[in-house]
Length: 114
Image (cartoon, rainbow, N blue to C red; front, side, top):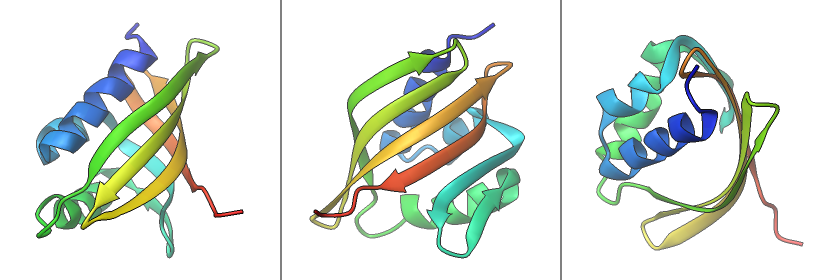
């Protein structure tokens, strides 16, 4: 069984390299990502390809810095991340569920200023 933190770290590396295929390879074909799109959950590789393909090819593609992470129960990774793009930063917490070496579910929650 793959180390969940290693899977999430590979996902971050592919994200920062704007490597769409490498990024998708860290997700199960039917993965669900909540909190990414205001329209609702993003489901499966096709939807992930559309959303991240647009972001990775933007004039100022995003970059992720993981500030801290924690593995829980050998299956979940909680990561405190800073996403920067076009001179703006968004702080978020991502909860990634990993099974069979792939992310099967992710929940991304943005930090709201106090």
